[in-house]
Image (cartoon, rainbow, N blue to C red; front, side, top):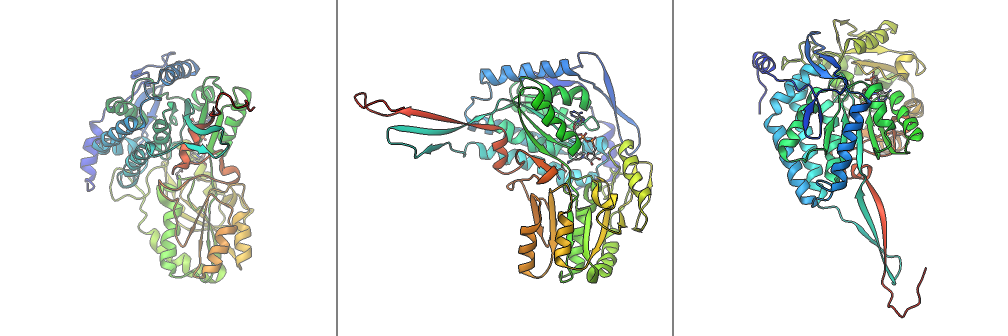
Length: 498
Ligand SMILES: NC(=O)C1=CN([C@@H]2O[C@H](COP(=O)(O)OP(=O)(O)OC[C@H]3O[C@@H](n4cnc5c(N)ncnc54)[C@H](O)[C@@H]3O)[C@@H](O)[C@H]2O)C=CC1
Ligand code: BAL
């Protein structure tokens, strides 16, 4: 499906109906308190809708309904192939409504329509299909424990799951989490980020249409303290999967410790290094990867390569080529299909990113920040101790640090509290492999930028990740637990064995 014109996207935007209630037990309803919050288009500041501002009572209600659904087996005990059929129907319904969802996503988040149409929607659909297709092909195991017993290792859905989502990939992160959770048979209580609730609510409606039974997929919009914390502290939620900042992620460990010791999986921040050695081949191609890694999705990406660690012999040519590629990264109206850098998600986030630019002593390229939009920007920093080199900016800002050797580059790359992604560019295969092994990150790419695909586990080391992985069959581990089942096979006259 090709892209439309700006006017055609505008016409779709003008005719959208925004979902505004919490989606609990199969229908939309207001928050029990009656409170609402505004969700705005960050590109214009215009109000899009007033969404239910839920609280602990709504979380309780959604959890009760999710528990009922889980225990009566309307979803959890369906044959896996039946869950598969329903989830594939959901993926097809999202595909049928992809244009509407892409425009809604762009309006609510400031993401470009180009990315929404070419990445977020196709990957969301693919992710749901992939997990649906996988679920009836996973087998339990029999242990070789003993001749007198059969010992089975069973995998069961974990139960009621809380999914706390970020705003940078509202639909895709929803899919990364509901794909394996629903496929496994769990019931879920989803909390979208307050900046971007709309598409999760619309997907919940489509899920009902696809045949996901009521109570299985609930979406409770609202703020972190009012909805996220009650999910984290809930005594009847078995597990929480979270994506967002490290600071908030760590809170979920406290919530779990102070409530029911629920399992917690955290996918958190990153300050991901791109290491370019002096022998890197084809610096033009390297520059393309660096630019894409740093500025894609406005740098609002936990896997963004926001730290360029470059050998001094490659630096000036690489920077020249980076500048030339950056000409294609035009900032502007997110609904214009030519735009590559849209609006930052909110004024608060714009202020945070602008604050980092105000701190920068040596802006090499770009640097303009106004009205919610920030130009793709390259900043030179003196060393890895600088704030711009250490903190996750989560905006289109690339910090460049010069090094003079392999060991220095790797040590600097690893000198971070994070450990989500890293990349290394070199023509020397031994250095590539030695470097990739030495880099402390959950995903390492050689001579490219990327975070893998749906088949590969995604998550971080250090303060980037905790407790499990999104994507791949490893994601199913998050939402299932193992049960060991022993069955006595001894003849009645045999002595009982303990
Ligand atoms: N790793 C990632 O993908 C993301 C990282 N971030 C980082 O976090 C920074 C701040 O952005 P935020 O939106 O504030 O991220 P955040 O981590 O606070 O928000 C993520 C989710 O957690 C919820 N939440 C917030 N406070 C909570 C609390 N006290 N208890 C329970 N849930 C809570 C939010 O409502 C949202 O649904 C960004 O500038 C960026 O550096 C933000 C979003 C995604
Ligand atoms: N890059 C996908 C995961 C995230 O940014 O949250």
